[in-house]
Amino acid sequence: MATQSPFSFLEGLLQQLPLPKLAPPDWAVSEAQHRIVLLLNHVLMQETEATVRLARQSGRVVLVQWRAFSFKLQATPAGLLDLAAPGAQADLVLTAIEESPLALAQAALRGDKPAVRIEGDVQLAADINWLTEHVRWDIEEDLARILGDVPARVMCQWTLNMVMAVRQFAGKASTFVPGQAAR
Image 1 (tube, helix red, strand yellow):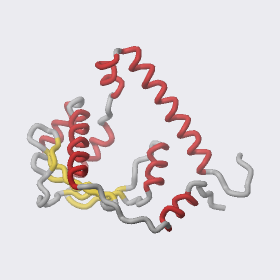
Image 2 (cartoon, rainbow, N blue to C red):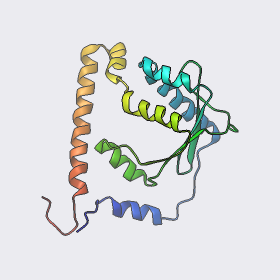
Image 3 (tube, rainbow, N blue to C red):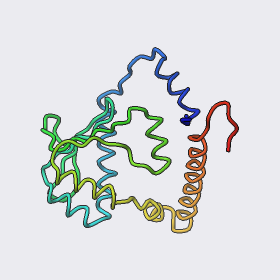
C-alpha cells in the first residue's frame, strides 16, 4: 500500500483554487538574482578549487530553470559567477523536474538533492556537479565574524537541532496513511 503525505491534500487544494497568476515585478526579480549571485560568489571564494574549476569555464553560460523562474549565470575569468546577458546562448541548461514547491521543500528537509534534467556541455555539467558535491557554506564562520565564536556556535547548534526535528517529523509524516494509526 502506497504511503501518502498528509500535505498532499493541501497541495491539491491549492492547485484547484482559481488564483490569479501573479508575477513579481522585473526589478524584484533582478534584485533577487543579483543577491543570489552575491551569495554564490561568497561561498565560492571560500574554496580555491571551486574558483579554479570555474575559471576554466570562463565565458560559459548556465541556464537554471524551475517552473516559470529562470536565470542565466556566466562563469568569469576570476572563477566566480555573474548574471549573463539576457540574450546569451546557454551552454548548459539545468531544469528542476519537480514542479511542486512542497515536494521540493520536503526533499530539501530530508537532505535530498532535487531531480534535475541536464542538457548541454558535459564538461561544464561535470564541473557544476563537482561544485554541488564539494562546496558548502560555512555559515558558522560568517556568523562568528559578526557575533563572536560562542554565539555563532550556539545559534548554529540550535538551528541544526531544529532542522533535525523537522526532518524527523517529515520522515514520520511521509509514512502517514490516513485511517491507520501512526507507527
